[in-house]
Image (cartoon, rainbow, N blue to C red; front, side, top):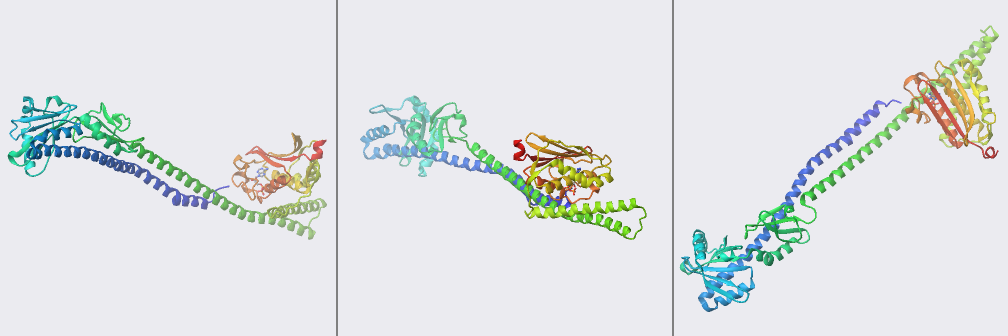
Length: 531
Ligand code: ADP
C-alpha cells in the first residue's frame, strides 16, 4: 500500500511543528549549557574569594588590634605609670603567645629595647647591634609610617624580623605614641606557625563549616601547615597569599566535589534530560504520525472498497443481463451454445452471491452479530463440496485441482457454512491471483494436535512485507502485478475472523513469483482426540 501524499504532508507538519523546534531548542540549550557552567563556576569562585578575603581580613584585624594594645602599653603607659610597662607588656605577651618579641625604638633608631617573654617572665634587653642595623635598613619604611602616623592613621607594614632569633616569623612595623619626638617605632615579631594554629585555625574551622575545606600551605603548595579537613594541596583550586604572611597561601575548595565537577555534573544531568525529552517528543511525533497515517490509509481503503465493490457488482450483473437478453431473444441456435450461456449466468450469479455474502457477513461480524452453529464437521467433505460448486468455474479458468486429502482425517468442531466460505474465499483468490501457471493444490492432514487444510497456488505470490496485513479488513496489495485484479479486500479478513471464532488460525507462506500457500489450522474436536 503506497503512502498517500497527505501522509507525507503530515510527516512534514510534524517535523516542522514538533521535531525541528525541539531540535533548535536542544541546540540552543546545549550551547548555553557551557556558558551556564561558566557562570556557575564564576559565582562559586567569587563566593570562595569572599571567604578567603574575610579570613585574611580577620587575621589582619587581630594583628592590628595587637599593634594597638602594644602601642598603648609602650607609649601611654610609659607616660602615666612608667614602671608598669614591663608588667603590662608581660601580661599581654603571656596572653598572646604568637607574638615572639617586641622591639621598641626611638625616632632616631639609635636606641631600641627588645621585649620577649620566656615561659614565666618578661625579658627586657637593649637591642643588639644587629637589631639596630636592621632597623636602620628599614628607615625608608619607617619614614613612610611616620607620615601616616602624623596624618593620624595607624598603618601596619609586614617586614623581615628585626631580632635574629625570630627569623622564622614576620615583623609588623608600626608607629605609636604622640607626635614628633614623642613617637615610638615598634616592630612586633609574630611567630607564623603559632599564629596559624592558635589564632587563625579556629577562624578557619568556623568559616569552612560543613561545605568547604580551608588550608594554609607553603607558597609552593609543597606542605600543608593547617587544614580544616585532610586535603591534597594541589586540589585547592583557589589560593591567595595571606596578607600577614605573604610566604603562605590560604587555599579553599568545596568538600566532596569540586565546583567544576558540580557544574559539569549539573550540565550532564541537564543534557541527559534534554535528550530524553527529545526522544519522548520524537517517539510521540512518530506515534501520532503512525496512527494518523493508519487512519488515512483505512479511509483510503474504504474508498477503494466502495469503488471495487461497485465494479465487482457491475461486471457480473452486466454479463448476466447480456447473456439473458440474448437467450430471451432466441438468437442462439445451437443447444451447446445455449448451455454455455446458462452456465455463465449461473457462474456470474454465484460470484455475485459470494460478494454479497461476504459483505453481509462482514457487516455482521463488524456488529458482532455473526452467529456460528458448531457441530462435528468433516473438512474433506467441505473441500469436495466447494470444488463441486466451483467445478465449472475452475474448468473454464483452466484449473484441474490437485487433491490430496487424508482419508482418515478426524472431524473438527465447527460451523460448516462458515468454513466453506473461508475455503471458497481462498480458492477464489488462488484463481484470481494466478498468472499463466494454473495450479490449485488442496491437502488435508493431521499435524501434532491440529488438523490442517492447505490450499496452494502457483500464482503471483505476495511480498513478505504484506503477509502480516493481508488479513486486515479492506487491505489489498496494490503494488506489483495485483494491480489489475479487482477485489473488495474482505475475503481474507473474513477467513481470519472465521478461524478465530473456531479457535484456529490461518497462516500464509508466499513469495512473489512462486505462488502462495494458505494453511487453515483447526483444533481437533475433543471426541476426535479421544479416538
Ligand atoms: P481481495 O478481494 O482483494 O482478494 P482478500 O482479503 O481476499 O481481498 O485478499 C487481500 C489481498 O491479499 C489481495 O488484494 C491480494 O493482494 C492478496 N492475496 C490474497 N490471496 C492471494 C493469492 N492467492 N495470491 C496472491 N495474492 C493474494
